[in-house]
Image (cartoon, rainbow over all chains, first blue to last red; front, side, top):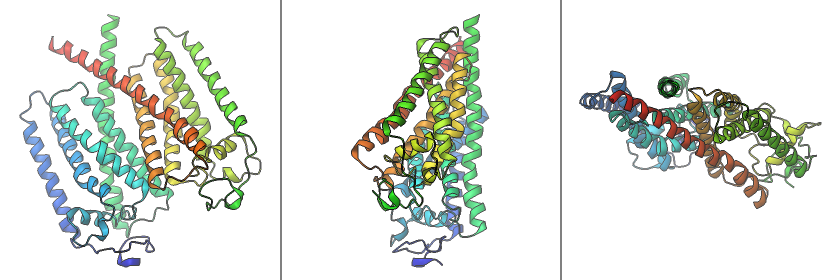
Length: 218
Length: 218
């Protein structure tokens, strides 16, 4: 236990009025993962009714719906609720961020770099991800460049997230389990998936220009 | 004058071993602006010898050469010289960052968000900008998506730069002159120019996909 009765590292972190977490890790994760599975399944089934979509397109729609809703409904409330850790009657989302702060206390400590990355992700990345679902479904000409843009946001956000953690002392988790399970593994989805999508969109965009050039030189 | 004989704000910033700036503002700016004008002119003249380039393409090549060289040779040394402010025999670049720190003392204080943004810009943005000069000159199919990527890096870096400054207290300049001339005006070039280039590349990419779709549906 650190100062002010909180469990976070470093122990001298000052969090006056901290209200202990009431939901267990299992309750928090089950609800997030359960909702995510429902979102994935719903988008997968609905996208089957759109014409001309490959399985990859439909999988991408599932990802963009999942990540967009996460940005807006999980990360958004964090950005706009500075005092979530001292609320007398915490809701589910307050508990999510108390749990996640065990892996990165910069969240509960409201580190400016974290608030900036989460704010950009929630306000810009969230709506843009949902727009990507629509853009893929309706074969928009901006579909690839939009997906690429959001991926760049994820990757740049990840760079800022991990590098500032390193430069700031790399001591924000309460145990190796939280470091590996949340800080590394959970975040890694927003590194390797955007990398794959960005590479795919980059290739598609280059191919479109090569086709255009070939037509011109005919 | 703040503590440790430095001129920066806030005055209680601790900079042990600070060596006062020796070059004047005029000397520092004249050398940077003079070199930049030479780079612009050289690229403009050389690009006139490449076939099939519009004036816009040539202007973009000038911008990418200028910004790439700035990232590598001005911002790079900052990232990899943590103690620049206490060097007994400072070189020109140490003096540049002492001067710029008058508008944003997070540079001399080595704020992690600043080091992260500058590090990404120098290491990734610098070489990618120079690659963009080559890509435009040789009409590569990846020219637009590459330029768009670097612009996204500039814009996301700008977001992190300005929002963390605001969240961290917005008190890092020694006078309104430095705030407006360096913090706002100088940085604004890396906001409005990347915005214009990104919009242009976005439109070109969408047009390439529309042409491809039109061909398929014929």
